[in-house]
Length: 229
Image (cartoon, rainbow, N blue to C red; front, side, top):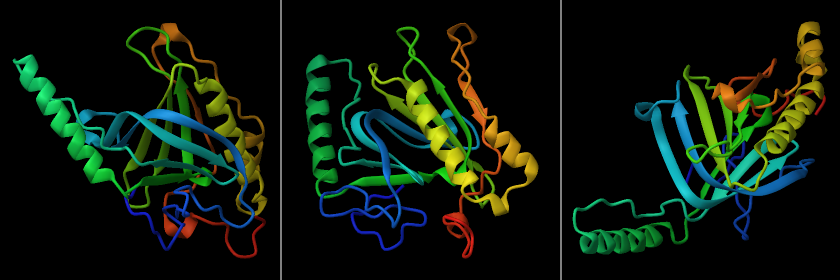
């Protein structure tokens, strides 16, 4: 994740064009776009003390391409959230916080990406009660050791199953497009992958593991020279 508008390298982070949208790489095609409402990033596990970034109730543009899942957001510091015993003080504090947030984010954009070749685990949850939300979770293994968990909150009208299925299909296509680095077992496993249905009674995300996923690193961002694209 990064806040700058100009990036010189897309291996780990996407570059933005004048329209503040990600610059596509040669041969890359857009498969789907939608707007999410929240984002949280974790290290190792889903725990409050392992969360190193969170934003909610802001429009986050998600772009699923043939090689990456990209996000952009220019309202990532929403402001607000202050608590006070006095309603008047709370309203004033919230107004000041929101104004400061708007000032901080003016001219800056939050950008990020998850290359499909890095996704090791993919899951989703459908909104099934007042406390739940339509959620998509991506898990990847960082080259430095800890796993990276990305939790995306969709709006209540967006199907997390359909979006997660689209990400899974695109990720499988990426791996199958590089058969030289796959074992026979990995090829068979990729061919038979299917996304399970979410069961509200279980309270657990519907999850699928993706074989042949690569660790998150600059060296693994693109196919090796001489390999099929």
